Image (cartoon, rainbow, N blue to C red):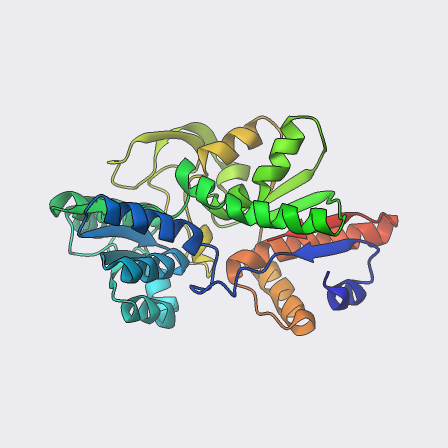
Length: 328
């Protein structure tokens, strides 16, 4: 429990968090990257293609591919490629080829640039390019680091580890908070708790936090849509802002996706989880305060959950409620 943070907020709320930054690749993404690289190797593939936003997934997959001797080609959203040069160089250190997206290397990239020459890119654009390049090369497959069901399955390790730790110390959470872009982080975190909720064993308030610049749950439509800008992927039922949506060049690159996991979308549609969108300036202020008292500099994506946790803690201060919150 972050005692210092609780004292700083002067709240009766109990706040716990799961820190994934000590994972070798710097985030939770390696949980799925290792699995997908393993099965690619078992299939006898030469390599894989993928997209990445802020670079966490690209870093994890490039590391996993290095372990298994696979080629890794990463299409990184252009604004993140420019904002986060060290992240792209880490990927290259692990042997990946990193290309800013949209690029002139693919037909869809050239078309997007012709229509929108000044675009900052999007995950939807990068997915289209990665899929096209996989289709053009023998022995290659496209892999995705979020949104799809198998990725959420891999990431249930987050929730399972959390549940074991809380049960060991006899802690009962009232509220679970997580940032949400494509859904891998939040979907993995809430999985064992949602099972209890659906079975009527326990109740939890679950909050998905997304950026105001890309609010797929809070402002999107629940409909079948393409997962990519080039409209070559299968349709998926999800909350979406439209496959052609290009978000502003915010620093939370991992949350700049036009749609949400079909699993999380259904849970939100059924009223089993809540969603909030927050402004980047307030999020960064919360991240700064958290870093100063906890000694951990959170990623822009994780800072979204921190902001809402702080807001909920302040509400408890006003009401005197001793709620227990958990965030990732």
